Image 1 (cartoon, rainbow over the protein chains, first blue to last red):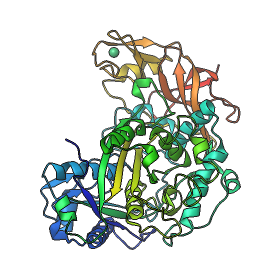
Image 2: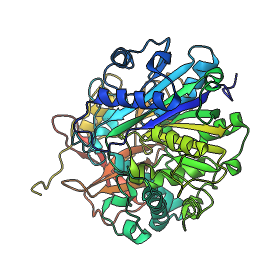
Image 3: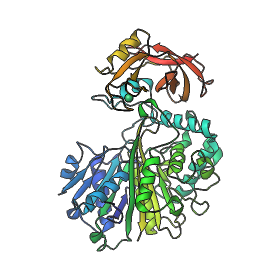
Image 4: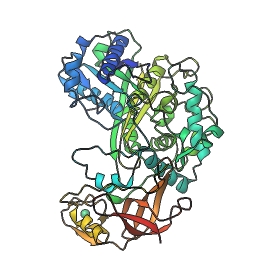
Length: 390
Length: 130
Ligand SMILES: [Zn+2]
């Protein structure tokens, strides 16, 4: 069974806040749920499936379903870090195709800024029973930044990728973010600005990193018969793929991500190729994340991503592969340190023709959204969806 | 900026990996080898992640290897280098590069194991230029 054409994204919402000192975590979940249902033209009473990940307070969906007042017959709290919500879109389509629900609500919220969390630069132990890998990693001080940095270091070594090429990814994001009134960073930056920003973990610099923001977002995925009754432009899911990649028992290879598996699976299901895609939302925790995923998804040969992203090729209206036209995680928003959901949101805006006019891709009828969750240098989840305007 | 020495937290020890840490206390680096498929693996498991066999055995590694990748964490009270080191036995392990000039590290550098004390636990296998 394929999910192709079995489900539609009917509602999207991104919380405008980037600093949520006066909002509770559950309150943000409730606000984005209300926002996305209003966007779809549905109400909380219509929801019969609920999806959340590790950012939701409590044990999986129990507290949230009760708190939101939902009456659901299907739940899924698969947590693959920041890629969870991209994966949830695929899982929601599977559940809808199987008749397990018809209106699936996916929510994300977080407030790392308000909580003063040292997101990228301090090693974190999950607490409780250690994962099998933790004793062999945590004592050595892995952080978010230095683990992605090791991927960049190896990529540079094997393929000659340069800091300047990585910098172009931030430059492109900043060109888009200037048009987004909610973006945390709205100043256009240059390659020189990026490569002259302070090194955090070699070879990644401050401007190679994404923003740290509070906020959240939500998505409603619906069955075709529901979508047919709604007034919003129709965006249907035609392909989805997911994968987990880790250290492979010590056969470590930092040059590629799980997108090498999730991407082709999604393309095969959709029956399209990378050349057909008009717009891409690519997880951008760091510049290197974008470069590796673009290669693994098939937009460039392995090792040639540096040339693909350079010279403004990712800037809408300038280059051939417009990406993250909301400013992405690099400049606009990375709510709760989980950037997958906002990737889907901007892809839907592009397909609806509702992106900012300055960054709207012409005739955007086919888009891809991809998420990477966890740590690219340790182990991570990958999720890809391909969406089509009907 | 008072800190000059980095403290290493103790690893959590489980029955599955206790021999690894016991050996570390004796200055030896162990790797798991599978008698079924012949592959080594790291971190150590009772069941081989390459073939699923339970016929895994502890072997003493030579302690020499090469740097697969590394990164110096500059934004820390005491800068330090994380690395993946590929052992002569073929498996690659996550570690730290220590007792070295952090500005003179490179991929492919030959390194050898040294053991660094942790806070109340067994020492951690780290690597230093050979
Ligand atoms: Zn084996």
